[in-house]
Image 1 (spheres, rainbow, N blue to C red):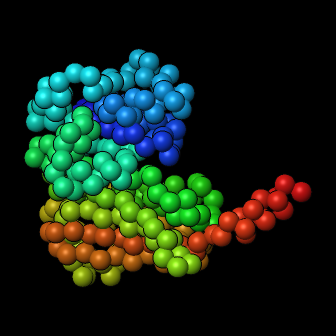
Image 2 (image 1 turned 30 degrees about the vertical axis):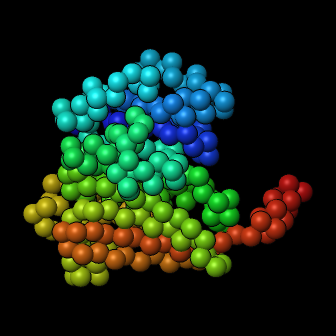
Length: 257
C-alpha cells in the first residue's frame, strides 16, 4: 500500500464545499492546505468543525509557505487535489501566479512531479442540471478521474471541465499521461479489456471501469468519446442531455404526490 500522503488544497469556493470536505474525510493520510479565503468560507458555512478531526493535518496561510511547499519536493505526497477550486485560482495557476498557499502548491507540484487533480466548482447553475441519479453520476465521474490519475505520468495533471452546450451538458476529463494508441482506443469499452504495454502492466485494474461508464452514459441517453495521442494526452468527453429546471421541478412534484 502506498504510504505517501495526499495534499488537499481548499480555495475560497463555497459551491460544493460540503461535498468536497466529506470526500476528503473518506481518505486516510490527508494533509489539508487552506488559503485565507478558504478559512473564512469554511467558517461562514459552519464547516470549521472538520478542522478538528484528529487524523487530519491542517495547514493555514498565516505562516510561511516555503516549508510547507518543500514537502512536495521531499516526496511526502503521491497526489495534490484542489477541491473546491475557484475559477480565479485556476486562472492564476494557468498564468503562473502563486500568491496564496494553494496556488503556490499548484505551481510547485508540477516541478516536484506530483500528479495534480483540480475540481473547478464555481460554475453557472445550469451546468449542473443533468437528469440522472446521483450515484450513477458520481460513479461515472469517479471512474474517469481514477483512470486519469492511474495512467498519468509523474508530475502530470488531470483536469475536469463541464459546460452547457445547447441542450447537452458536456463533461471533459483530460490528463497529460501515457496516452492511447488507435488500436487500444478501439477496444476501450470492451469488458475486461486491458492494454498490454510495458507502461501499464503493473497498474491495477479490472478492465470494467470504462465499460461501466459507457453503460451509465447509454442509460442516460448520452455519448462518451475519447481523444488521445500516445505519450502526450487523453481526453474523455461525455455528453448528457441537459434537464431543464421546469422539467426537474415537475418530476419532483410528481414524486412528492
